[in-house]
Every structure is written in structure tokens, then in C-alpha cells.
Amino acid sequence: MQTERTNRRSDQVSASLHERLRRGARRLTGARREVLRVMELESRPLTNKEIFQALPKGCCDLATVYRCIQLLENLGLVKKFFLGDGPARYVLISEGDMCHRHHLVCTRCRMIVDIGECIVRELEDRVVERSRFKAVTHRLEFFGICPTCQ
Ligand SMILES: [Zn+2]
Ligand SMILES: [Zn+2]
Image (cartoon, rainbow, N blue to C red):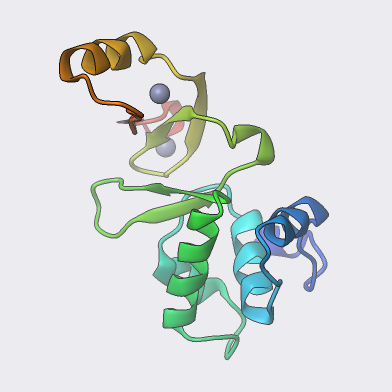
């Protein structure tokens, strides 16, 4: 991660991210900018602690990172993953992914593959039919070991 971080100017967060935050009526505070910058440079899902550790020293405390991630999740800017190895991990989702999608995650290196739009609509229809619930949604992620890690 350290090497990737040199590719971008240190104070920069992409304009589209900034815009999405603004649309959520949120200011880009110093801590939020740093958290977003760390997440933009890392395509793999990170824990709150990993994000905190990648921040510049003295930027903010861990509690601020938790609050910031919570906000980003509420705004639909990050997606939460549980890889079965402890705490939740978060990854920025690109704007085109805002709609409902599913992902495949490597449990070793944490690489994420977007497997596209929903493939279980039929199953959801069946659940709706049987339960007569309304506004049914679901979360479904796939896990495995990627070709590189095999
Ligand atoms: Zn892997
Ligand atoms: Zn789905």
C-alpha cells in the first residue's frame, strides 16, 4: 500500500468522491479527506483499524475513523464485508456500483471481484411469495480463494 500512495498528491481526494459526499450534505473535514484518501488508494476491503494505521500520524483518533466509516456507509459510499476473520471490512464503491450488486472476495488476499447485477431475483421473488413480506431485500456475497492465492 505504501508504494501506491505515492502515486497521488498527498492532499487529493477525487472530485467525484468529494461531490458524492457533498450531495450527502457532508463537509469534507480533514479526517474525512484522509480516510477517503486511504480508501481510494486501496482496492481491498480494510478494517477500521487498518484505515486508522494508514492515516498520517496525529490525523485523528480511532473513534473518529469509526464515525467517519459509519457516515460513509450511511451515504452508500462504502460497502461492508465480513470475511469471517474478525471485524468488518470496508471498501469504497464506485458510483456505477451504487445499485444492487454482488461481489466475490478472496479470503486470503481480499481481492474483490464484481460479479455484476443480481443473480438471485427469482429466489427473492419466491421468498416474497411465501412470506408475503413487502420491501424485501437481501445481502449476498461470495467468498473463495483467487487464482493467485491458490
Ligand atoms: Zn487471493
Ligand atoms: Zn442480489
